[in-house]
Length: 135
Image (tube, helix red, strand yellow):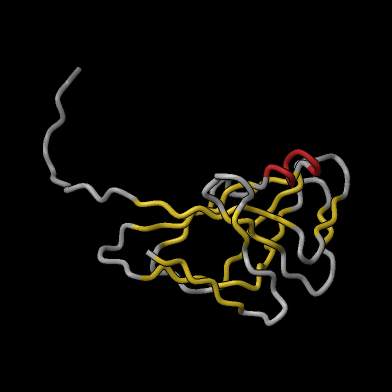
Protein backbone atom coordinates (compact mmCIF):
# COMPACT_ATOMS: atom_id res chain seq x y z
CA UNK A 1 0.00 0.00 0.00
CA UNK A 2 1.20 3.47 -0.86
CA UNK A 3 0.04 6.70 0.68
CA UNK A 4 0.45 9.55 -1.79
CA UNK A 5 0.15 13.13 -0.52
CA UNK A 6 -0.73 15.89 -2.98
CA UNK A 7 -0.56 19.62 -2.36
CA UNK A 8 -3.94 21.25 -3.01
CA UNK A 9 -2.24 24.57 -2.25
CA UNK A 10 1.25 25.10 -3.65
CA UNK A 11 2.77 26.37 -0.41
CA UNK A 12 1.11 23.82 1.91
CA UNK A 13 3.38 21.84 4.20
CA UNK A 14 3.51 18.13 3.34
CA UNK A 15 2.84 15.80 6.30
CA UNK A 16 5.91 14.42 8.00
CA UNK A 17 6.43 11.11 9.76
CA UNK A 18 6.47 11.52 13.54
CA UNK A 19 10.00 11.24 14.91
CA UNK A 20 10.80 7.88 16.45
CA UNK A 21 8.89 4.71 15.70
CA UNK A 22 5.33 6.05 15.95
CA UNK A 23 3.27 5.19 12.82
CA UNK A 24 1.75 8.66 12.45
CA UNK A 25 2.11 11.62 10.12
CA UNK A 26 2.00 15.18 11.47
CA UNK A 27 -0.61 17.39 9.79
CA UNK A 28 -0.02 21.13 9.52
CA UNK A 29 -2.38 24.09 9.24
CA UNK A 30 -2.70 25.85 5.91
CA UNK A 31 -3.95 29.37 6.61
CA UNK A 32 -3.88 32.71 4.81
CA UNK A 33 -3.92 34.37 8.23
CA UNK A 34 -3.94 33.28 11.87
CA UNK A 35 -7.20 31.81 13.18
CA UNK A 36 -8.41 33.01 16.54
CA UNK A 37 -10.29 30.50 18.69
CA UNK A 38 -12.15 31.93 21.65
CA UNK A 39 -12.98 29.56 24.53
CA UNK A 40 -15.42 26.93 23.24
CA UNK A 41 -14.97 27.95 19.57
CA UNK A 42 -14.85 25.25 16.91
CA UNK A 43 -13.05 26.06 13.65
CA UNK A 44 -12.36 23.97 10.58
CA UNK A 45 -8.67 24.24 9.76
CA UNK A 46 -7.48 23.38 6.26
CA UNK A 47 -4.23 21.53 5.60
CA UNK A 48 -3.83 22.31 1.90
CA UNK A 49 -3.11 18.59 1.45
CA UNK A 50 -5.05 15.74 -0.15
CA UNK A 51 -4.02 12.11 -0.18
CA UNK A 52 -4.70 8.83 -1.89
CA UNK A 53 -4.27 5.29 -0.66
CA UNK A 54 -3.06 3.27 -3.63
CA UNK A 55 -2.95 -0.42 -4.43
CA UNK A 56 -6.12 -1.23 -2.54
CA UNK A 57 -7.47 -4.67 -3.39
CA UNK A 58 -10.47 -4.30 -1.09
CA UNK A 59 -11.79 -1.12 0.52
CA UNK A 60 -10.55 -2.04 3.99
CA UNK A 61 -8.29 0.94 4.59
CA UNK A 62 -9.17 4.07 6.50
CA UNK A 63 -7.23 7.05 7.72
CA UNK A 64 -7.68 8.30 11.25
CA UNK A 65 -7.21 11.91 12.25
CA UNK A 66 -5.90 11.90 15.79
CA UNK A 67 -5.25 14.71 18.27
CA UNK A 68 -1.87 16.42 18.43
CA UNK A 69 -0.29 15.90 21.83
CA UNK A 70 1.35 19.34 21.61
CA UNK A 71 -1.96 21.11 20.88
CA UNK A 72 -3.62 19.46 23.87
CA UNK A 73 -0.72 19.96 26.27
CA UNK A 74 0.33 23.47 25.25
CA UNK A 75 -2.96 25.07 24.19
CA UNK A 76 -5.81 22.82 25.41
CA UNK A 77 -7.01 22.55 21.80
CA UNK A 78 -8.71 19.28 20.89
CA UNK A 79 -10.29 17.65 17.86
CA UNK A 80 -13.97 18.61 17.81
CA UNK A 81 -14.96 15.04 16.89
CA UNK A 82 -12.31 13.28 19.07
CA UNK A 83 -11.14 11.09 16.17
CA UNK A 84 -11.81 11.78 12.50
CA UNK A 85 -12.34 8.86 10.13
CA UNK A 86 -11.57 9.17 6.42
CA UNK A 87 -12.65 6.51 3.95
CA UNK A 88 -9.92 4.83 1.93
CA UNK A 89 -11.54 6.11 -1.27
CA UNK A 90 -11.64 9.80 -0.22
CA UNK A 91 -9.37 12.00 -2.34
CA UNK A 92 -10.27 15.53 -1.21
CA UNK A 93 -8.41 17.99 0.97
CA UNK A 94 -7.93 17.08 4.61
CA UNK A 95 -9.47 19.56 7.04
CA UNK A 96 -9.44 19.29 10.82
CA UNK A 97 -12.14 20.60 13.18
CA UNK A 98 -10.49 22.02 16.31
CA UNK A 99 -12.12 23.20 19.53
CA UNK A 100 -10.59 25.52 22.11
CA UNK A 101 -11.08 23.78 25.46
CA UNK A 102 -9.20 26.43 27.41
CA UNK A 103 -10.58 29.51 29.15
CA UNK A 104 -8.49 31.91 27.08
CA UNK A 105 -8.25 32.92 23.42
CA UNK A 106 -5.87 30.77 21.36
CA UNK A 107 -4.27 31.33 17.97
CA UNK A 108 -3.58 28.80 15.21
CA UNK A 109 -0.87 29.86 12.76
CA UNK A 110 0.01 28.74 9.25
CA UNK A 111 2.33 25.72 9.30
CA UNK A 112 1.52 24.82 12.91
CA UNK A 113 1.08 21.13 13.81
CA UNK A 114 -2.64 20.57 14.31
CA UNK A 115 -3.24 16.80 14.26
CA UNK A 116 -1.86 13.41 13.33
CA UNK A 117 -2.87 10.99 10.61
CA UNK A 118 -2.68 7.20 10.88
CA UNK A 119 -3.67 4.59 8.31
CA UNK A 120 -5.32 1.40 9.48
CA UNK A 121 -7.03 -1.68 8.10
CA UNK A 122 -10.65 -2.17 9.09
CA UNK A 123 -12.14 -5.66 9.35
CA UNK A 124 -15.26 -6.06 7.27
CA UNK A 125 -17.22 -8.92 8.88
CA UNK A 126 -19.76 -11.11 7.16
CA UNK A 127 -23.11 -9.92 8.45
CA UNK A 128 -26.23 -12.01 8.88
CA UNK A 129 -29.58 -11.43 10.52
CA UNK A 130 -30.42 -13.80 13.32
CA UNK A 131 -31.17 -14.16 16.98
CA UNK A 132 -28.59 -13.50 19.64
CA UNK A 133 -27.99 -15.86 22.54
CA UNK A 134 -29.31 -14.66 25.87
CA UNK A 135 -26.74 -14.35 28.65
